[in-house]
Image (tube, rainbow, N blue to C red; front, side, top):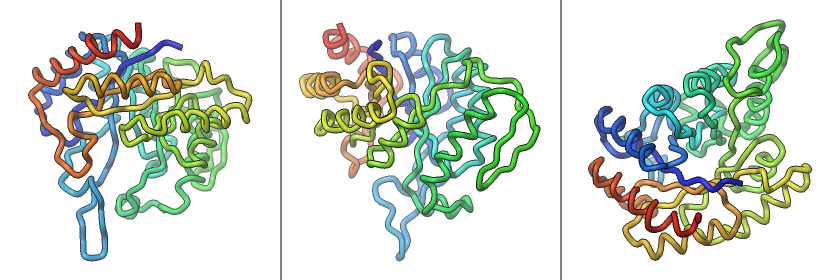
Length: 301
């Protein structure tokens, strides 16, 4: 399987002007990065006397993923565009299917739909969605996505939708729809990934410790469903760092474990208790260039 190096778009936490984000995305593509990732949240919760919110709290900058990636599709030519990840059970699955199909069309097949079940209960409350059955609904939603991208006319029934002789055209550029990548490392999440999805986005807290054990669990699950690990992409993201020796060890550990897609998160993001180390577009792109040339290239051959 081809090895890929990607980067997380600085459209989250960093306060960049839209022109700067355009320059960054086009610059990363020009440097040879294979994919760009976009996180997702509709709301971030402020802490209250009865609610703890952890590291990512109210006031966090977050551009909307589908709209943003659709815009980037028109500004780039080669790089893959990935949601990493959309909180699927907060949305109506047919609308997600329509949006994802459209990005796949305008990008000419460069879109990858990363999904997850989410973790922020207050966000679900704010959107009028049940937090506690989100895993079950995600499995239904995946089936809805596949149905909407498949044959006409559409017919399916879920706990939320009843579709009888309806139509959703145009279909995605990619036959059968863009690949669905699942984010999560729980036992249920790994099983769900192997059973229903086309790839895995591992949430490894941006560290390589335990990467081998995670891959063993995923390979066991893939074997359970008769899927070939050699054709099932595994993706992980680590923090961009000036410590190239440490970064090379981290990359090497993921590659040795069996990951085929690695990505660079914002500098400083590995320290979730601290503010990310915001850099200018030029400085960030220069760091990405040096990492690709001095760290990634020797490892990837």
